[in-house]
Structure formats: structure tokens, C-alpha cells
Image 1 (cartoon, one colour):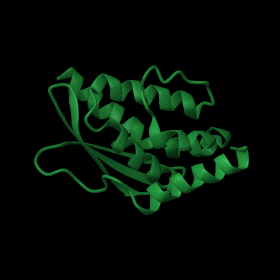
Image 2 (spheres, helix red, strand yellow):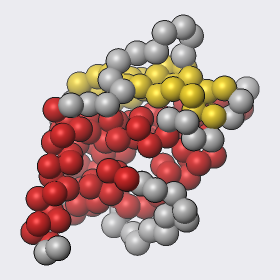
Image 3 (cartoon, helix red, strand yellow):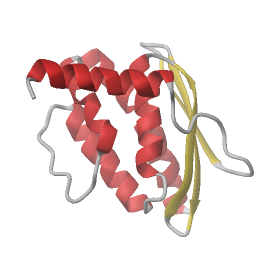
Image 4 (spheres, one colour):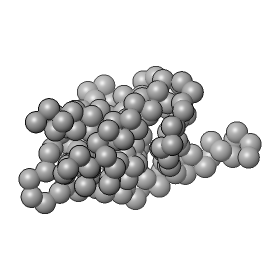
Length: 147
């Protein structure tokens, strides 16, 4: 597949997550809620997490922002749901490396649609958009691990 075709496919995946977000909304009960924003772009995300026995049982998000921040949040919630907290954090680390343009070793983790965001690394001003939900998840599960 040529670079242009791959780039087009990645854009389609990003726009699909933006127009048809997965896991958008809140979680009933008493979930962990982390609010984060990106004042330079105006993105505002709330990440809702339900963590039990070291597993991310449920992950949802809400908020407003650009296509990159909202599609990234959609992809992130899909990727971490049902995974051990340590795997979710490892995925976040891999995603951060991907956003910095580093070659990554997925180490057995399937990043799935998340790889569609790798082109964001070429636009440094947009990296914060892509990583916003991931930083919120890190903050939330990091607090959970300390309890």
C-alpha cells in the first residue's frame, strides 16, 4: 500500500472515531472521573474509569474538542477497556512514544486503530490534542494504584 493510500486510510479511521465516537458518555455509579483540558486548542475531556481488581472494567469519555482529541479519546477507551491497569499504562507509554515520532515495539500489545494517529507526530502543536485523554487516564489509574 502506498504512503498516500495509508495516509488516506488513517484519516478515514480518525474521522470515523470523531463522527462515531466509541464509549462516549459517563459511567453509572461512582466512577473515577478525571477532567483535563488543552487551553491552547480549547479541548476539554472528562475520562470516566471503573477499575476493579487491577482491571479497567469500564472506560468512557465526554467533552469537546478537535477531531484529533476526540478520536484519540474514543480509541483510547476502546483500547484499555478490559485490560490490566499495567497494560493500559504501557499502551499510554507506547502512544506517547508514537506521538514523539519514535519507533515503537508493541511488545505483544495490539494498538489497533490508535496507530492511525501516528501522523500527528509531524504536527507538534497537535500532539497535546492527541495525548489529552491518555494523560487523563494515566492520572486516574495512577491515583487508583496509590489507594
